[in-house]
Length: 104
Image 1 (tube, one colour):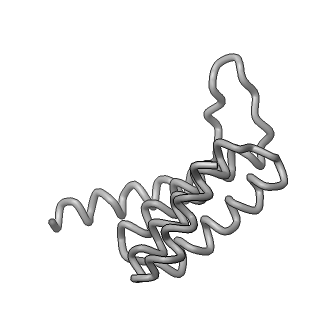
Image 2: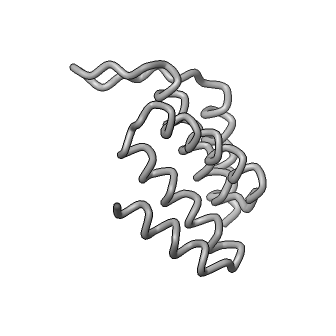
């Protein structure tokens, strides 16, 4: 468990320090959409570490970007992340609503 915690923290630090550089071959994304993917991953790591407030802030920013970019896949990913955070907080009705939105 301690090794997992250390690995997660190392991944989080690396993610926070990195800039979104990876662009899928043949598909260019605007920089803000790439940032949203990094924020969603950061939210996942923060949630795994138990930092739910910080995770929610990161996923909320990613959701804002996804809506502005009209990126359905990214928005679904953000809804799944928000649902997981709500589930960890014990808010199952809100979690279910997020999961259902992700399927639309």
